[in-house]
Picture 1: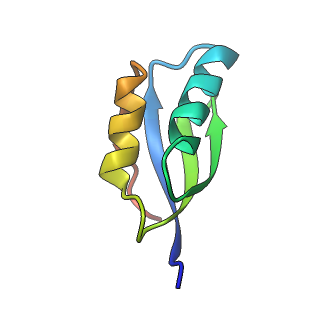
Picture 2: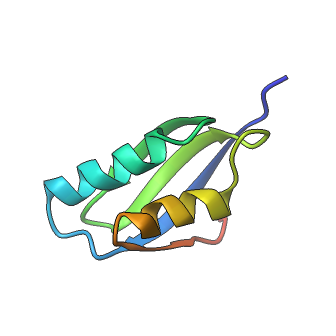
Length: 76
């Protein structure tokens, strides 16, 4: 049974639409990521994923591999 979860990651270093595409592509390339909604103005991405297949640390690493700083944002 899939366990869907949504988390928000802070992403520093994005300055244009190409940056948004790079971050989106990096996240969507991970098994288990269902959606990645990148907000350039707010410097964050809301990710919905299957926590049985991928975790936050893997998503942060995927973003770091693209050259951007990323960190989990606290839940509200």
